[in-house]
Figure (cartoon, rainbow, N blue to C red):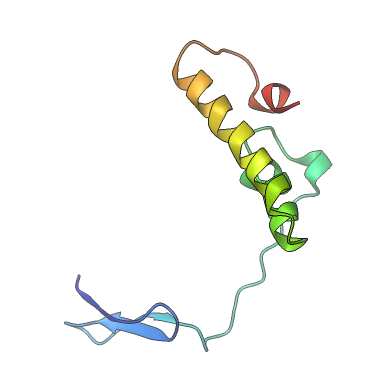
Length: 89
């Protein structure tokens, strides 16, 4: 598959002409469980602090939470066993 176009407007498959991406197309609403009900590996829960920092223009908070996630994943790749969320606390 060869894609032609831009990510900020639209793109299509060069061979078939099928639309690959179009920012004007209807968006699917994403529904996720409340943070309290999510498992420790849920992306929304894991990145909540980073997203909150970005939304509030608090990039120090966003960077701090992102750093914690990175450290935890490094530990998990090494010798760390146990829950990721408990490591973030």
